[in-house]
Length: 94
Image 1 (cartoon, one colour):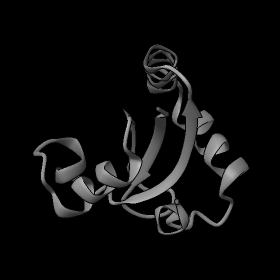
Image 2 (tube, helix red, strand yellow):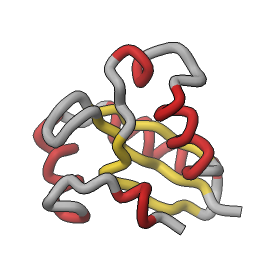
Image 3 (cartoon, helix red, strand yellow):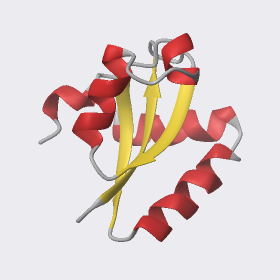
Image 4 (cartoon, rainbow, N blue to C red):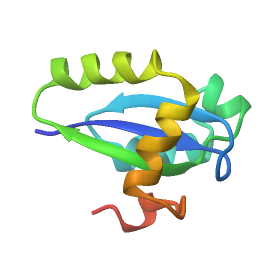
């Protein structure tokens, strides 16, 4: 089983949401369909622009918490390293 830390947004360089899940496709579907009320629903964070795979729930949780504490510019740099065009990479995620 894999665990994912991810960043979703509403548009390139828009609102950033950092999350963690064990099923990235399902979670992004939930964001797009506004299944869960809260931050991503309110700000329409429906685009997956960055993700990272972890082998354990604990390592994913710790990484998510670390990234949530980061400055916005650090998160943007992280996204730009993987996805400089800020494409919605969920569409190509297996």
